[in-house]
Every structure is written in C-alpha cells, then in structure tokens.
Length: 240
Length: 219
Ligand SMILES: Nc1ncnc2c1ncn2[C@@H]1O[C@H](COP(=O)(O)OP(=O)(O)O)[C@@H](O)[C@H]1O
Ligand SMILES: [Mg+2]
Image (cartoon, rainbow over all chains, first blue to last red):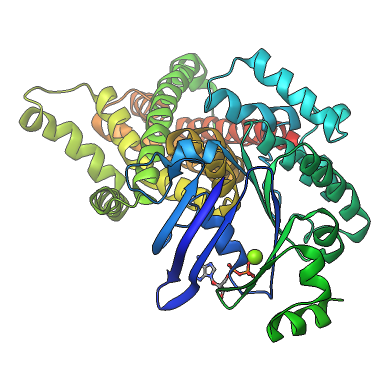
C-alpha cells in the first residue's frame, strides 16, 4: 500500500530524515514512535506531501507520489490525515466540516455527502452534534469529528499525528476507541503516538525513529519486550 | 455666539439629498475597493514574486500620496489618459475604490496570515485545491477577524468622501457650502453637514457591531 525508499528530508541545513526505507501493507496498522524532534511528523507529512521530500521515493498504492507528474491533490484525496490539534473548520458546523471536501473536491451531491457524513458521525458517536459549531465541542469530540472528516473522503490510508497528545487524559480513551474500531475495519493506518499501550494492543508493527533514522521495525511484542537498540531501550525506559 | 437656523430650513431637503450622493459613492467605492483589496492581498501572500511586487508597489503609491491628489489626478487627468472627460461622480468612485483597495489589502493580508496555519494544512490534506481553500476556508475566517478594521476603513471612507466636493460632486459637503454661499453665512449649514456625517458614522458603527455579532455566531 505504502512504500518508502531512501526518504531524505532537510529543512535548510537541518537534515531531519536521513534515508528511511520501509513499507506498509494494505490493512496494516503501524505505530510510529520515537523521541520528540526525531522526525516522526515530518515522515508522516512526507507521505501526503504536506512536506516535499528532498530525495527518495514514496509510493501510495501504485502511484509514485514523488514523481513530478503525479497530481498531488488526487493523492491527498486518498490519504486521510488527523492532526494533533484537530484543525476543524471553525466557521462550519460539524456536518459541514464532513461534507465540505466530498462535495467541493470529489463533486458528490449534498445528499450523498450528508448520507456519508451522518453514517460516520454515528460511528464516532456524535450524531447529535451534527449542527453544532466546533467551538462547542470538547477536545475528544473535536478529534472524533476530525477523524470522521478525514474518513468522509473515503481514503485508502489514514495518517494520525499524535491524535491524543493535545487531549485531557479523560478524553484520550474515546479517541483511541474510535481508532481501534477503525483498525478493525481493515483500514491501512500509520499512527504517530506516545500511547504505548495502544501501540502494543492495536499496531501490527512498530517503527522506532530516532534522529531521522528508522532504528527499529518490529511487531509490538518483539519491540516492547526485547528492543534491539540501546536507543529504543532508553526511550522505552523513559516512557514506561 | 449667535446661531440662526431658520433661514436654512427650506434648504434642508436639498442638503439631505446629498446623503444619497455620498452613500452611493462610498458604497460603490467600498465594494470595488474590497474586491480589489482581496485580489491584492492574495497577490501579497502569493509565492509568485512579480505579483507580490505589483501589489506592494501599488499599495505603497496609494498610501504614500494624498487622497485628494489621487482624486484630482483621475478627474483632471482623464482627458489625457482615457481620451475623454469622465464625470466627477465616476472619478470620485474610481479614486476612492483604488485608494481603499490599497488599505483594505493590507488589512486582509494581515487577517489571512493570522488564520492558523493548520487550517491550510487540514484543507490541503483533504485535497482541497488552493483557490477553493482560500475562498471557502481561509478568507471567511480572516474576514471575521478583521471585520472591525474593515468597518473602520469604511467609516473613514465615508468621512473622507467630503473631499469629492473639490471636483464638484454634489455631495452633502458641497450642498451645505452652496447653501451657505447663497445666504452669506456658512457656519450653520456646515454644522448641519457635520451633524449628518456624524449620524451616518454612528449608524455605520452600529451596523458594523450588529454584523460582527452575527458573524460570531459560531463561537
Ligand atoms: N517546517 C520546518 N522548518 C524547519 N524545521 C522543521 C520544520 N518542521 C520540522 N522541523 C524540525 O525538524 C525536526 C523534526 O521535527 P518533527 O518531524 O516535527 O519531529 P517529531 O514529530 O518527531 O517531534 C525538528 O528539529 C524540527 O524543529
Ligand atoms: Mg510531531
């Protein structure tokens, strides 16, 4: 589903990603963990070209998205993204947040878009909030709406960048639950997270990034019980 | 101090008619200036250097010279520039629109930059193309934040519109001045003009506040 080959990214002189090679199979859930500043967000953002890789190649499905000829907009329609700070459109209602892109980008009719939106709102447990504005929602509710908004485009891949890091502790669970049930539907997911319990339980694989290098790539049981590198050991000791 | 308004009462309707002249100029110039301001502000945040320069030079010129000069240049220059003499009224609308476009573009630019960068990324991540993103996501949020500043600009425009009197537009100002000349007494009709301008500004301020409240519905 996703293939990354020798991905480099620099901001000016600062090399943030130092040659990352990996792949994510269809239906696979991959947790990306690592210290702050190690390049996790940048890696994720290179997958939907919010950052343009300095070198290397990225395939989403059959498409080489790093090819200049590729239509970036088309690629992004198939790759949903959920941000730490939600970024809901504050001037649109919850329902409008969900229907905007399907209508304006994919050209769905209002009826079609709303049908999809209501079904998704039901899935994330927020049907009764359809006509509220985002400011009236709690953090956990906002993030569930943000997930639903991304899903409304019916993407093949979902990227999550620390989706629970901005939430009060009591709201983390409701968002993780939504993500868990999404994982069970067979969605391909790449999740940057500090929720080790969640990674252990839900992920098929854990990628450990440190200083722009992919240090470990292993199933969670293996990674958490027996990390190979010293850096991963140190990191896990601090986290647990 | 002696004030006697009685000789001016018959002329009151004549002066009041000027309100429509003033409003017409200000409204049209306001709308055109706003549209121009949006275009210029998009130039200013564009990554295309030449557009950026055009907008910056434009703004610098229109903010760096007196409005009354711009008005006269357009009015008296029209035969040489356009090949015929344009109406005072047209010159007034044109110069005010061009001038306020410069000011408004700065306001809108600041408003756009103040919108959370995440809004842009969220739209991009959904595959929303640049134009739609700007129009549907970024500008509405920017406008909401800058509504007070825009209202201010519009009020300034209303007050400053009195200078169109210099090219012979029959606005509130010119009418009161004429009435003053006919009666050999300027003080009272000018006071009347002042009151009219003041009431217009108060009304606009009030409307602006109401509009702002409406726009804040989503908070
Ligand atoms: N747009 C940018 N411009 C310059 N430096 C950046 C930019 N984005 C990220 N960085 C830098 O890249 C490094 C990795 O950032 P990031 O990918 O956000 O790490 P993580 O998500 O793992 O915390 C950091 O040092 C950060 O300061
Ligand atoms: Mg990050």
